[in-house]
Image (cartoon, rainbow, N blue to C red; front, side, top):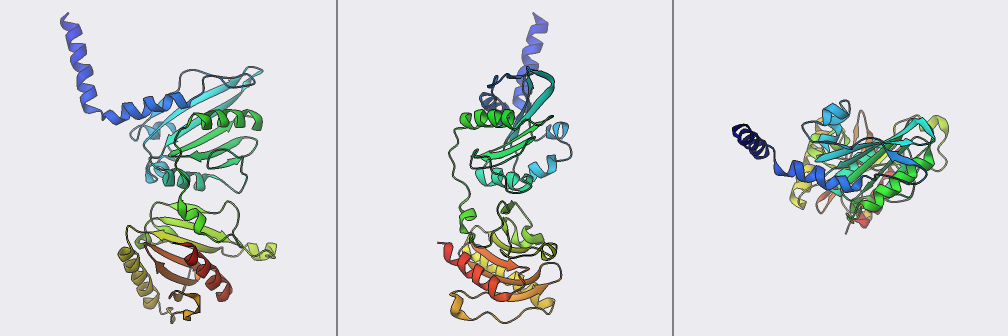
Length: 306
């Protein structure tokens, strides 16, 4: 009897020390994991859950990236094919806390534009599938080429996610003209390699007639740095101008024909720069060969921000 009382006390002590949300998050994610899927793919063993403290045990080399993007918890499952004991598919479902952070991880994982029509956006090939929906980022990996099996499991998981959050609105601000498909990325800090820009989005632009040789040169980018309010965005704009002035590369503002008042400059790593601020955003163009192309796209970007 005395031993039983000690066991109860130890259990209560552990529950007191471990944050309640750890248990809640992992248990809430279990319904997202299919126990059985079509065409003979069946779960092997019980799912494993991971927290901020234990994620390194599962994905040591990538844990830092997930933690930077706001990782809250994850669940991992393995599926085997009844027709082949060698075939398996690994499933990871990550709770990233918010849709923008789920998109951010997704944007860093996809290699190019291969949408699979799953979730808010997805990447699908013969062995891998990545998608995000709401605050969740989902990754699947197969040992053998099995695009049908991966897609079936991915769609089953997607149907179980009830988070209906829309994609980050900033994605829709980027002009479609010249936008490289699948190139928009979200960074939680240090956008464009500058700490004062903090978090934001970057997109790559290409010319329709760009040659293979020219494609090896530096990328042309539009970027949107996100701030809590217009005052902080304006402060970052001034800081950026000061950096360019110190390097002796700042130029006079562009003509007012664009409808906004950006500043120009050059950077050793990012080439020609045009920056401006609008509302809670600092926007910019970098690496464009022709200034008029950058100015035109930046003006279009500015106009899309309401």
